[in-house]
Length: 110
Length: 113
Image 1 (cartoon, chains in turn cyan, purple):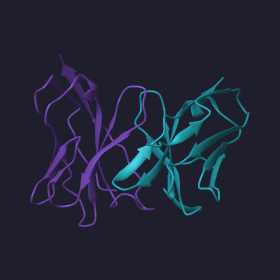
Image 2 (cartoon, one colour):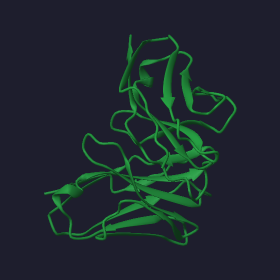
Image 3 (cartoon, chains in turn green, purple):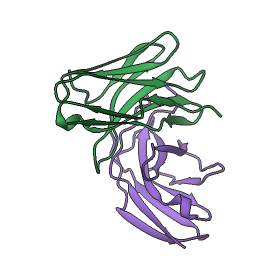
């Protein structure tokens, strides 16, 4: 069965640079969620989209923005990167029964 | 958001049943009880969810107290692949636009061969 696809899987950036993470949900899933998991921490909800509209917002910094496109894929844009942004970023899409998570993008900010 | 309380860690032997408890005394009438697990170096994985009645699926069973202030995730025969952090989360029905998950401290399950 098709799963959630995230790209890239690994990303290394310098401080103050910009990063773009992409998420391709499971086909026919209309809702996408973004989560951030810092080292040794639990996942934290950032933002979600339903039918291409923002549906909920969590503790997402103003430096971050996201959108969902007409093909339902989503992108998380992160600017002015800080050392503390180093984390695993998970995307999930929802369907019958719950949310299905992708493998994550590991972002390292040097 | 309503809060859940889980033990920090639990241990089990392979092929034995495991009962993972969760307390949610402030649960509201519209909160669903969701269980997710996260294996090392992987994204969280949906396990099961329910509202009032006990639920069974191929992965596990969910037993919900009559007053809904607690629940128990039951793994009928633990395997080494079940070693993970298990999260009990209160949220919307699932598969909806308002179903954000608030991960708190979960239970680290260790399975011994």
